[in-house]
Length: 302
Image 1 (cartoon, rainbow, N blue to C red):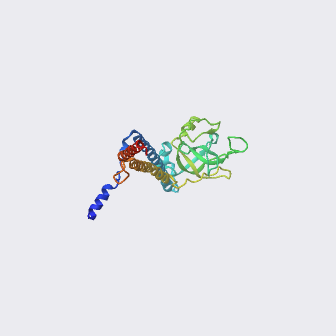
Image 2: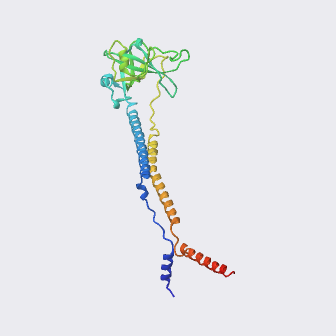
Image 3: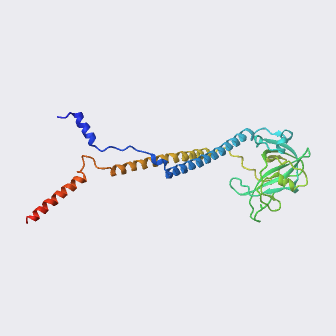
């Protein structure tokens, strides 16, 4: 009587073997191409994620400048002169006290300037300082007009005489490469503004109006203070990086499924084991014996 170990060995020898999962197909041209596409997609996602991180870093730096400079005590123009000549990012929003008078005849309005999401214009006026130098002051914002397309309904004139003002530093803007109607500017590009004037202009930075004395009732609206909200750039960056990782996760899952399906197909096409039906050769021999017996019976007339 065979022992149990011998029986288990005999059963194991008779059972069909399970083929291992192989991934040699990954070296084919098709799968290498799919992997290359996944890598390109992941690289694009990482690039977009880094772009969003850069934007987030810029937003954080701007928030820090606002928090550090916006509510500072005003510094005299003599201490800020170099910032009006050449812009310094770290000095942005710093209050500066100035004294002089407006050159109202050279006033300009800047097109397409939203304020609280409302379209409108900003008003720029050259300001001649007591020292003889000239800076530009942004006096505020005007809504779009209803009387004449492309112009505000009215532009308040600046006050006359000697003015004491507090302005906040802002760097000049780059040019937009497009023209503007007479008396208007496409952006606060101070170099282009200076070319329209008959006197030198300090073109590094301009002053955003905070207060002026003596004031007047009819003035442009003050611009909304800068936002100190960071925004969603960090969240977007993490989403793009996650998409890049998922590209390789998806590739690995697809390869695993493909390998499993190939193994199942090979197992179905494998030859039948000894425990299965009789081999085809034996079946053919039995079929041949039956035919011979029928032939002998026919010869005997049976």
